Length: 230
Picture 1 (tube, helix red, strand yellow):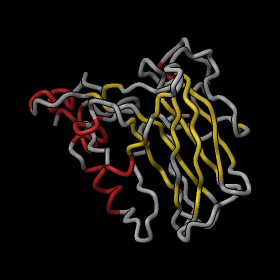
Picture 2 (cartoon, rainbow, N blue to C red):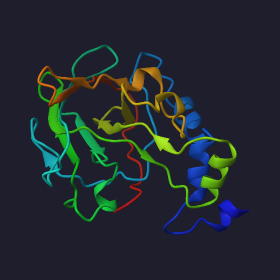
Picture 3 (cartoon, rainbow, N blue to C red):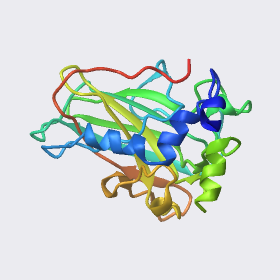
């Protein structure tokens, strides 16, 4: 009853309850069985925005002079036969090194840490950013009471969000988690699977990191979700 009463236009405890009980992740897994080895999906989350800036490969999505460990991300998008997909859209968004998305943080520029990239003729994409931090799910409502009663913490592991698309293929919504995060095995939304853990490799200089992660798309309808926020 409390979860229903706490849900309104600006706060949705019902969706959050589905997340922290594992229902949302279960539905995502059931609808993305990767029969040919396609990349696993993950939750969209509440922070995707549909009109992120179009960027050239190699651009940085850190537009606010965001302090943090520089991160270079690269990979290849392929079809079910392993062939590279040119002109696929790689939409990426993330929290800052203090665990806030730009619409939560007045110190960040609009659309900071968001960008859309097109793959080249070999299906490759790459961009620059900063390492994200994990952050807690909201605990100021009934779902927070539920987590406390279950003796569970609210902290999601650090991750990058990806939405990869190309006409003729299912839209892939996914997350790539930092391999060194202490909350990988206790994610409150049960979102981490082994294949979604990426290697955020610290470089020899100790001052920057890299992440290489490839995606494989499944043929199907190219249907985008409804943006949670404008």
